[in-house]
Length: 404
Ligand code: AMP
Image 1 (cartoon, helix red, strand yellow):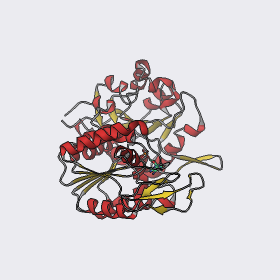
Image 2: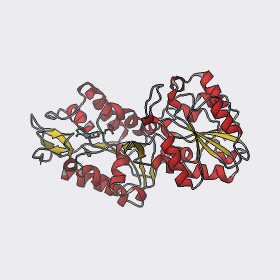
Image 3: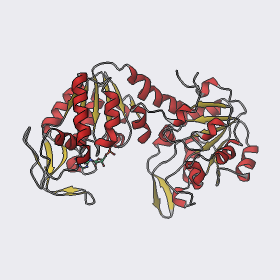
Image 4: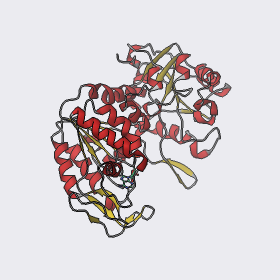
């Protein structure tokens, strides 16, 4: 059953505490902190516009970084309040605390249509501990609680879970609704063929997703370093490529399960290899490609899928009706080993007849860098939350909101 959304609850003149995910990257420039990617702020605008329209008093709360209870300028949400005011073209008051008298006095003076952003919730250790007294302090200024922070919904923290049990009226926002729609509903009975592209560093991070998708996917294309652990499972030599030797059994089991269920797990047929990857300098020494089916020689490491694999994966993606992509095909931060990842980005964007879902993390960076962000059906704002949700896990922040 779908969750209650802000469309289902009274908002006029209500004090609405909205948990948002404003954990945006900041860069220090001339002693000031500047936001380098404001996607997470922009994604909340539909919710904020609706609350304004409805005459709510909007109190935004969020976390930034991992301050572990310490107040530091590098993790203050003040720059976010300033930027949000510019985007909304209206004042956004900032309170340098998230609980206590200052917050209560500010909220008491709010009128319908006002917006306030509270300071970083994680300046209190109680937030991550889901401390009930802290949650009760947050709840003191709320008639209504709204969770629009999908990226934090896999954590049972005071602002994502605890507070929802205290405030009587609660709902999800439009961003959360969209995330649940695409990562949940759209993938419940996906149009076929359903092609999943999985990459990134570790099999252990993605095995839960592979397991969950074996019941739905037709084809799973594997890239990135996780392909080498699968390679080991098939008895291949992988040189000094990044791998998880202790996860070879897990990879073997996944291959067997896939076979039994009639799902094709496709592994790279060729690999871009180098003797030396310098991640800091963003260079690789004299790269070459293995011949199709050839092992990776000793002393060499795989850094990207090879050209034959790119062609193979492009064909699979082009024939799909539903595509889910999570994780880069290689060390995409280095230009010389980013070809595979950008080729997948292009192929996903080119298949306009398919529902294409970018499941968070580094593939989001890749699709944006390639300039295809507006050509796919949906880009998730959650990293860990997207993976956990795709694994079929219950997200505490979602579970705490009632169904319709
Ligand atoms: P993840 O967070 O698991 O999606 O992994 C993303 C990271 O995997 C990126 O930083 C990539 O550089 C890294 N990665 C992908 N392929 C490789 C590879 N062949 N060797 C080393 N690192 C890789």
